[in-house]
Length: 607
Image (cartoon, rainbow, N blue to C red; front, side, top):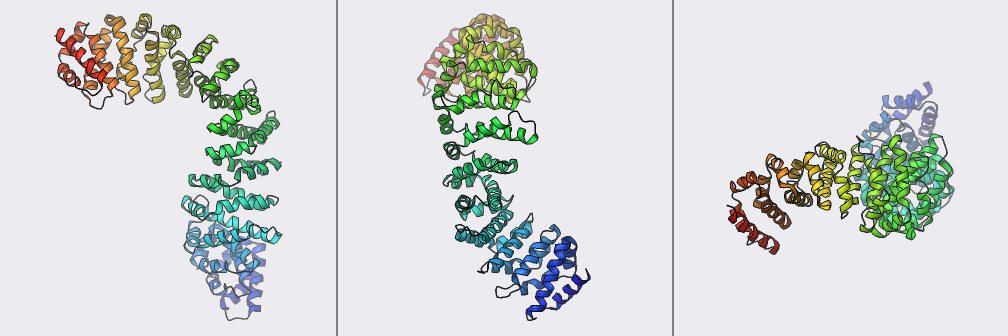
């Protein structure tokens, strides 16, 4: 370190007027010391305040500039030196050097700026203020077509500099996007895909930029899908594939890019990865299997990309995904079930899948997981069944296949996501299916569990679905036995509470169910209606100008039904119903105004 101290002393005394030889010799000593022990040499440079003498030496005409830029690049590898580099005023002269035509000057300057920006807010801000990113972006745009080896080195450094400049900073990333770097980098990748270092820099830059929503549109207008698929195809190393995956995942959130990736043949390559890793026990095999299968599921979330892969139920991708369901690998079971749920997003697909026996495969999978109890697989399989049950023609077929019986096996689950999907599946199945609603509605254990979940205040979704299923059992069965089971199970008060929901559809479902309870077994429900303040709830709904016409209509139907009970009749008389109903005779909705007239007559007759 003695030679270093001597060199630093000389350099401190030197100025722009000193002979180039002396300065060059000092700089060589510095570079040698940095190569030997970077941290120690950097501390020495900082202690002796050498950085402040660099701005005057950094000028485009000076032969020393590339060495000084190299020294700055080396010292800025240390986190503790990045702030001092900015404070010493090195950014503006470095940015001016970017106007040089000398390849070595540009290379070392790019390195210096990139290292100063690395994980440094001060460094990025200084480069931003000096307009450095714009100049580097322009350089890349002007030289990206040149495949000369030295030029590729420079492109690698410049891409790295932009990456360090914008990493984890949305506003700086947005700046790069507005400068148009995305189309340039995509073209660059297409030309230089044979260069591993440059390819890697491009991928990291894409990974950063792809997280930003505003980048997706620009990416969609390029050949990014084709380029990434071509690159993916030739990769054998796990790390390189992972890098491409990290770019694909955020990009595949965009529906246009989903379709582009499907058309570029990505799914076929992902299926190969699945086939190669499914029996692997290494961590990297497990990771690749998960990433590849998850990505296929993500691509199926786009309507066009999903339909293209479905191919009328004859698509090879669709067939391969089906084969995952009976697999012994939980990740593949999960991805297979989620994929079916995604394919089941229109009636045509759902009808085809039910007709070709997919329900049986899902039931077998669920039966395996009653004991094994993998919650994510349970949730995914129930999601698929729920979607398949949406078309009217599928409901009776699925009920005949025993779907309700298998779903009920999960009634004891304590996992809210499973509870939520279980409820949704049963509700879809019984829609318009009177016999099934009757069977389920007289199942005391089911009704008891629904009443319990109606109080699950920590899980709004489960609570809402329980109420809706309770109501659906009554509405679709129209059965006195079901009504009796719900009353005995303590479900009436929850249906009354449901009438006060902020969701109109839930209000309406509850009022129709309560109307049926009143019509089928008013005597048995009387005490529960009184205890839940039903009359008061109906008064509020009728008085509220914001209530939808169907809410007002069904509330009046219910009021008329309640008049057959003495205590409820008294409660109706105790509130100004006549006044509210009289006003509704002038309602713009003819059904409401007509029902208001009928209700007024009933109230008058029984007053």
